Length: 136
Ligand code: GCU
Ligand code: CA
Image (tube, rainbow, N blue to C red):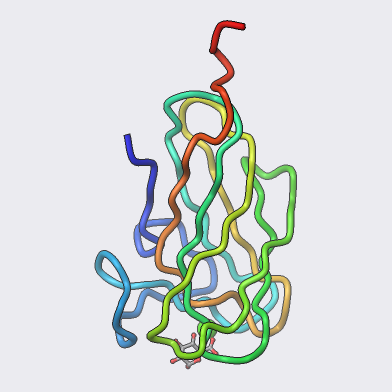
């Protein structure tokens, strides 16, 4: 199964769904409020537990990084950088490796600077290592 959620379908705290900058997938993207603490919480329903690569599709039309803190079910915070993409209509990806459990995982990406997060299009997760239940 493709493990993916559009940002506009995720749980948004201090942000709005917009569609004025083209090139997004689905119905639009999330424009994070430009404040520390604005966030998007995705739900990824993993087929198997184990390490996954999370790919965030985003745009940042400024020249300043828009880092976020990524947690899974509220733990394991890691910083993920979202440098400028050249234009708000230019979408790129950044990837972070996390451990997911089988079933639903809440993946929260919270802005850590006063500029807020980048414009967020979607999150995709791909199993990276052997699943937790693979026989040795
Ligand atoms: C512009 C742009 C928004 C973006 C914002 C920002 O207003 O149109 O899509 O979110 O800049 O700097 O965060
Ligand atoms: Ca914004």
